[in-house]
Each structure stands twice: as structure tokens, then as C-alpha cells.
Amino acid sequence: MTATASRRTSTSSAPSGSPVLTYYLIAAATTVLVVVGLAVVLSSTSMSALRSTGDNPYSLFIIQVIALGLGSVALVIGSRMPLAFWKRVAFPILAASMVLLLLVYFTGEASGGNKNWLRFGPVTFQPSEVAKLGLALFLGVALAVGRKQLNTLKGALVPGGIAALLVLCLVLAGRDMGTAIVICLMVAAAYWVAGLPLRYFAVAVGMALVGVMVLLQDGDSRGGRIDAWLNPETCDPQGECMQTLHGTWALASGGLWGLGPGMSREKWGYLPVADSDFIFSIIGEEYGLVGTVTILIAFGMLAVAVHRLVTRHTDPFVQIAAAAIGAWIIGQASINIAVVVGLAPVTGVPLPLVSSGGSSLIVSLAAIGVLMAFARREPGAPEAFAARPSVVKKSFAVVARRRRG
Image 1 (cartoon, one colour):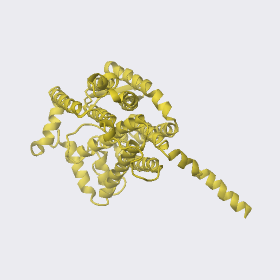
Image 2 (cartoon, helix red, strand yellow):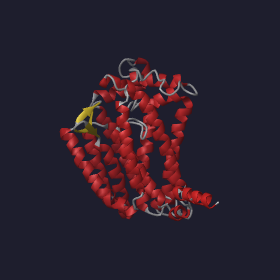
Image 3 (tube, helix red, strand yellow):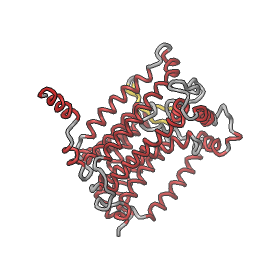
Image 4 (tube, one colour):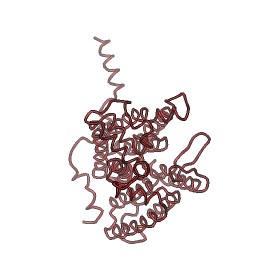
């Protein structure tokens, strides 16, 4: 049995079940995450909006709603696109994102020590989010075509490995280590599903460790965050430990049911970036253990859906691209939550589909649309969808029966 076959279960040996379950798992999980995120963003941005505008506590929330609208359009349209479309646009999306990342390097804006934003008038945009989607699709195409050559170094590097390294270097040029870690998770998942021999993973892990050590020596902020994480008892509560400390207090004060919607205390200037990197703390404070567990269950549902795509689908492009997108969204969520609960140093990555930030929300919803397009073409799913009348058809049928009665 080849490495590729041993890591992917064929459709015939996959567990039985409804072929449309994957689609509805993705839809339900996304709805929960977006609705909870919208409510908590409204709460956590109100104070920042008042400080910036002086009279409108909803200004930042309105931006999030606009981003949600654009992302929802991308999701709906993307979920209806055929697989051939996503294969065809994989390289153009990746190439465009790399051009934008080059523009970030030369003309981008810095925030939080990372240079990863482009400004277009009053709007800022983060091209690295688009790069994640483009890279996931491109790896799906490249590794699906060349998976039989992955046992050689050339086959592993050309073209998927080179593309991943270029994106990684461009992101690191902006000193965005958090995004770089997420990209590494995506690449690892894609190559694992494609069947890359384990010896290459061992080499890659060793190189990654060396790279992390070099990056830690390149800036005081990264070393300070790790030192604060390893030695919290000696950390300055008004300095490096401020986020972690107040995030923990927010989680602890929520109890089982939380303080109630909009009742967070930490959002009043005590917890930095409460609407983004530490929004999970605000969820715990306002909605308690019930709220945080709900978020974990929703991401768990996405993980199950991605696993079903990898193990049940017959198209290797879908298997590889879905694994990369799943590693991006679920891996980034795991990093964010680990930081909030103190299991990892502060990395500065938002909680996908939940945190404020237009770039992240729009592209994440577009990626969910890709997963839904894959799920609509899972073996047996097209026939199952065709056999189920739509809600509109059902409604007209009910009305017609009542009129005849």
C-alpha cells in the first residue's frame, strides 16, 4: 500500500452516512460562529468606536456587518461553482496575492509590530488572507497532479513547495510570525494528505525549528512574549502579561452562564484587542462556559466535515485543498484559543469567522464557500440534493394544496 493510499480512506471503505451531512455540518457550524462573533464584536468594539468617533458606538460594528455581507456573497457564489472553476482560478488567486504581498513589503502599513496591511483610501486590507486561500487551492492542483513524484525532492518542491516557500517568505518579510505558522500548518496538511514520505516531514520540522530560533533572535517583542508565557510569575502585569492576565480574568469571571450579552467588564479598556485576538475571552465572560463550549463544538463540526471530505471524496484535488483549508481555519482557531487559555504565547492571530476584521471574515467565508462547493459534489450528494425539493418549492406546493382544498 502506498503512502498516499494509507493516509486517505477510499470512498468504498469510508463510513456510511448521508452524503449531504458534510454540507450541512459546514453550514451549521459557520452560522453558529458568525452569529456569535457578530454579537460579541458588537459588544467588544463599542468602547473603541466611541473613542475613535466620539458619538457612534456602532461604527466598527457596521464595518463588520459590511464585511459579513461581502463574505456571504462570496460564500453563496463560491459554493455553487464547479470543481473545474476552483482548479482554474487557483494559480491566478495565488499570483495576485503574491503581488499584493510584494506591495505590502514596499508600501504596506504596520500594526502591532507586523507590516501586513495595504491601504486603499479609508479601507485597509490584509493580502496574506487571500494568500492562504490561493495557496490551499494551488497546492490542491499541484499535488493532485504530481503526487506520484512526491518521493523525490524535485517532485516535492516543484511547483507546490516553491510556491509555499515564496508565500512564507513574503509573509515573514512583514514580520507576521502568527500567519507564517498557520501557513506552515496548511502546507503540512496538504502534503500529508497528498502522501509525502515521512522522512521529508522530519527534515521540514528540523528546518522550521531552526527558522523559529532565528526569528526569535530578530525581535525583542517575540522573545518577550515567550518569556512572559514561560515565566508568568515574574512578568509585568502592565506590560507583556497584560493581555494574558486580563484574558484569563475575563474567562474566569464568566462562570457557567456568563455575565450576559454586552456585560463584559474587560472590554472597557482593560483587555487589549478584545474584539480580535482575545475575543474568545469576551465570549467566556459574557456567555460563560456554555458559550465557549459552543464555539469549540462548532469548530469540531468543521473538523468532522473536513475529515469527511478528505476520506469520502474521490477527487484528490478536493482532498488536498480541503485539508489545507481545514488546517488553516481549525488550526488558526486552535492557536487563538490556546493563547487565550495560556497554553501558548501571544501570536496575534484572530479567531476565524468570529473576530473582528474585514479581510479575515471575507476570505474565511469565501474559503467556507469552497468547502461547501466540495461538499455539494461529494459522492452521492448531487443526487441527494436533486431528490430534495427546495424550501421555496415546498412552500409553493403547500400553498397550492391549500388553494385546491
